[in-house]
Image (cartoon, rainbow, N blue to C red):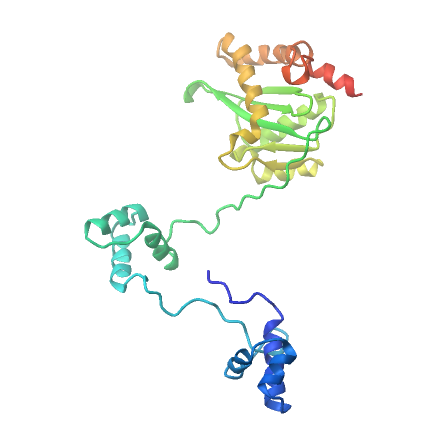
Length: 297
């Protein structure tokens, strides 16, 4: 997209006002230029342009795009046509098209090939691709201000075991449950049960961009008064607390018991009682999450 040479929204109106003073009120070009604070040559150029009607029916001299008419390094029509013909043959990606052009002796860059495909509307980039927004991450000054959630899997696909886990960043209070499936509905159910067990209220919930934490899940928990934010794409350290909690759960509990749903359902609650009430946490000064919560009451 090419930008206009000025972003001032009032400039089209000012141009037409200057032109009217010169054409219909007998002002000289120099006097009009001094009056509006522009150069003599700028007003001369405005006099050569034709006014148009703006949205409210007001005459203005519009701001045009700064796109050049010609470019010395622009692709030739021959290369453009060859790119489109190669794409039409097998619908191959820009990288393969670029390689084939290189083998044919046509020198151009990969970005130029992608640009040609995009301008012709045949790029594989989806215009419906989700635009990720990342509101400021809240500072975990109290319990529940920032709670991180994630899902976990273990075992082969045919016998895979799945579970949810969450942790409060302030107190390191953790909770986990076995789940037959991982989806939006199960995620919302897990949060509902965790809220009834947690000794504090949830304010902000942070997750990755998994399908189990998509729009339906966001609307469901926000209806309950919990704000949902996503971690940054390809930045697993944003959810580092829950990732470490899952690692601890696997190392100290799940890896020591049979990989069956019954074993997980029995042992996980016992381990959580130990984790929250007996296990010292280095980040809490060797206190347990429960002791840390009691200390702030």
